[in-house]
Amino acid sequence: MLRELVILRRNHIYWFVMILFPLLVLFFFTSLMDDGLPTSMPVGVVDLDNTSTTRALERRLDGFQMSHVVAHYPSVAEARRAVQRGEIYGFIYFPKGTTDNLLASRQPKISYYYTNTTLVAGALLMKDMKTISNLGSAAVGQATMRARGFTDQQIQAFLQPIRLDLHQIANPYTSYNSYLTTMMVPGMFLLFIFLISAYSLGTELKFSSSKKWLAMTDNRILVAIIGKFLPQTLIWLALVYGYQYYVFYVLQFPHLGSPWMLVILGLMQVLAAQGFGIFLFGLLPSLRLSMSVCSLWAVLSFSMVGSAFPVMGMDGPLQSLSWLFPLRHYYMIYQICVFNGYPLIDAWFHFAALSAFLLLPWLVLKKIKNAMLNYVYIP
Image (tube, rainbow, N blue to C red):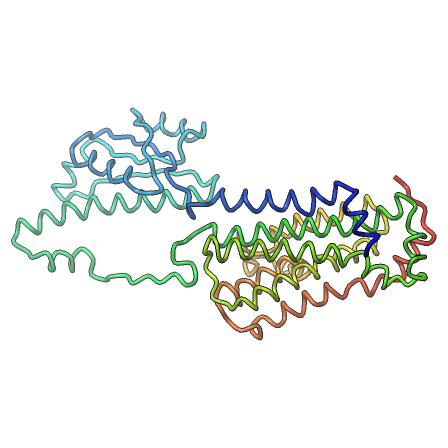
């Protein structure tokens, strides 16, 4: 352990990968989505009717938190080209005669166009523009019924016969920060842990210090592995627990589970990632190959975790493959036990999977020892 602490102090790569980069990732993602949802996304208007009614609808659209009217266009073709150039995410089109047809109850057609190249922006703006189109017909209906002598209660019952009572469990504000940051930041931590674990073993071969390292433990590879990685484990745990305190108690991310669940989850996250990194080096006892596979596996984890595209919607082989990614099990335990507050027994299989990743190095200890004693480093 003392030898490893000296290596950590002298090699600046450890400082960058274990302290600087994780902190940059943490503050980058939490500040990037600080508002929870994207706001003031640019939209356009094509208003060929140009009446007080359509202008009122435009002002309401601009007043929404997520939409900001930045331009008016003379034609649909001009607005479409603005979308293609990336100047706006969508636009709403009021054809000539919209107000007259609306007042005469002739069902005018209001069109809205949005780009789904960016799924989040397209979905949110579609919701705003759809609301505006509904408000237009509701306003005319309200004025007509009030002129006929209906009371406000009767008008409300006619315009909205069923009142929705919406309850968004665990994330009532629909905050992207609450569920994306809590996947992206731990995923980046796992990437760094994978890489630094393989790097720590690979540099023993690269700098021809592996035999001296094993000689300090009388060639007991288990003692050597524990001594090498225990200081790193303590540093990673301090970083992970600092991240958890920052997002759950400073930024007040929703967490229904107990603080002890966070402690257990952070411990399993670090140990499973280190076990997986050591295992990959044991399979491929080469600094370059093992770090390449660690990078590939960590990057694929972001797609297989199931936060952007649900695993249940993937093909059968991909659903089976998702069990081989530590981030997937971390995310499921977080969702079940921290985000929704269910007991750990409901996520026991994912907990067992992380434990299996922790124990993987047992399968390759002899191969690692053989590599340290006999392999020659090849750049």
